[in-house]
Length: 193
Image (cartoon, rainbow, N blue to C red; front, side, top):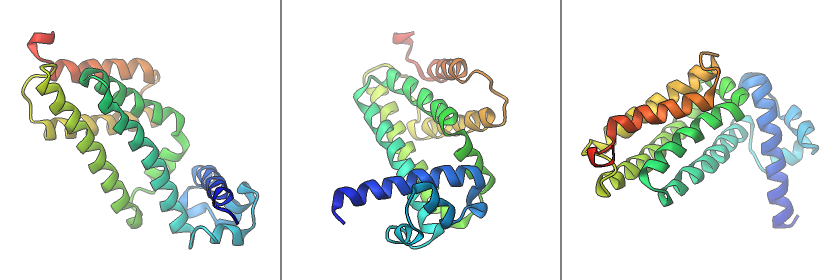
């Protein structure tokens, strides 16, 4: 097997795993269903993943790496634009990955997920805190505690995603815009009002 076909096969497995885990959750999913959805043998799945837990964590890491890459790219934007895009990206995630996020929330207490979730949150926090610091340096944002402000923004975004998933937010784009304005009004410098 060459490297390119190996990468394609692993991507097929992860795409199939996304569908199966989204539909049945971790407890209800099995390697056989994932292999069938990927169009490969069960043994083919085991060439890439040791077991169901390894496959699930591989899927989590893949999804989180993709999202973190998009957030990391926000550093190229102005701080105010980066904040707006960050909010939009979180709400877009809720809309596009509703089933997977819902399944993940139901199985929040799976111990093996904790380190991956924590690392993902820390990475988001670091990037957002850096964006806020840049906004303070360029005068877009007033003097704030960037670490705590980043934490508050991320917690609010988690709450917004949960509210969308439970049906409390019907218009995520409109909510995203209002949430961005709420954050921005709290940290905007008087010079940029």
